[in-house]
Image (cartoon, rainbow over all chains, first blue to last red; front, side):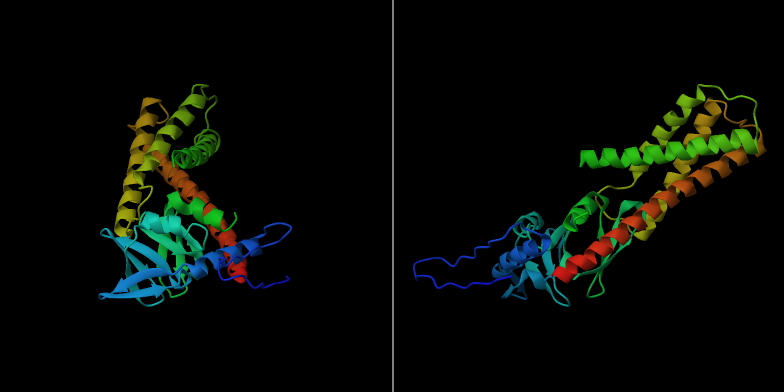
Amino acid sequence: MKITIQDRSPEEEDEIIIRCRSVDEHLLKLIYALKAGRDRLTVSREDKIFQVQPSDIFYFEAVDNKVFACMEKEVYDVRYKLYELEERLKNTDFFRASKSTVINLAKVENICPAFNGRFEVCMENGEKLMVSRQYVPHLKEKLGL
Amino acid sequence: MFKRKIKFLTNVFCTTTSCMLLAVALLTTVINPVERVESVLLWQIPGVAALLTLVSLIYPWDRFMGKRELAARVAFHYILINVGVLGSGALFDWYDPGNPGSVITMLITIAVVFATVFGINWSRSVKDAKQMNEKLRKYKKIC
């Protein structure tokens, strides 16, 4: 792939133009990564505010009307609702796995069947999460099945 | 979501009907051979299968169950199936409720059909998980 970087005038906005014959899976991932990479998320913990890369988040979980961003080891508070995060991270690695979780597919180690049409996903940090029957088609769609 | 529920119920209905049909075939030809089977049975089988399919809605659709809740619901599901089949069977004269041997045969048949449907659904899930893991590996390679 040929990469060309052009200078721009100070009044212009940074712009990435992709010239291709067709948008394949690889290119789509690149676009997602570009979009996600610039879009940092504001989270908080113990009254301190942090900016994190969405790609570092393993999953979001809603518990008692609060939403938490779970990283490899740390857990942060997020001020967004789960459906807002789902919308905001629509074209990235994240997918809705249940009413209370949005999972980062890039951090999933493997998928195992669970009873009654559900699936259990093992995350790279060893945590196990469920994909409810209602959201299994979302996961399959994300994987291109 | 309604579409998905219908699809799920259709799958359960088809699997249950097929297994019931096989069970009836085995019962009427091998286990307890009879000379002829009434044609009304062709309506009774899908009718009871439809009833049993509706019973499968006792599992929550969009929330998780703990191991205890899951075990309780599976047990309740199994009891409802037994009640449904034995009740319908008594109504349609599939067996003699006063004959313990006949009741035991029905109970064994129900257990075999339940286990078969469970096994078929489980093997589908295993196949799905395998496919998803393959796709996941490719997905992560691209990442």
